Image 1 (cartoon, rainbow, N blue to C red):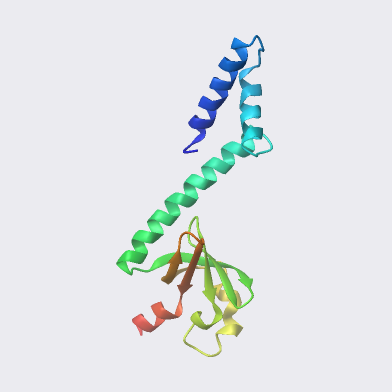
Image 2: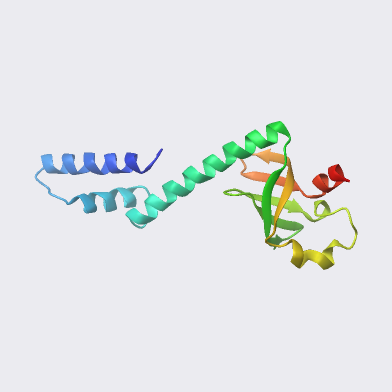
Length: 145
């Protein structure tokens, strides 16, 4: 499904097919049925899922270009996970290993100052099929030093 227009076309086809068999449904009922056929709760949920997938795809395409150029990408640390942190890269999530946060040994005391702040990161590894991105703040700090 490329976008919501495909789902609307499916609903239109469903309405026309049912009308040929003397079953009349409204446009909104057709949209709701298509959403359920595609595994979503309702039409609004399906439309939101389609838009989220489109934004995620655009973010991955942008990040692959940045990775190919070996350029830094802006992001912010949004959470802590086992072994490191989660970084929001504007539509895609990345993993920041604890060893790649800073060059200083005492960075753990300044963790509150790092959370939620826009910072530059280097992309170390990308695996689109697995949905994994690994970034480093340390690589950027070492380049500037």
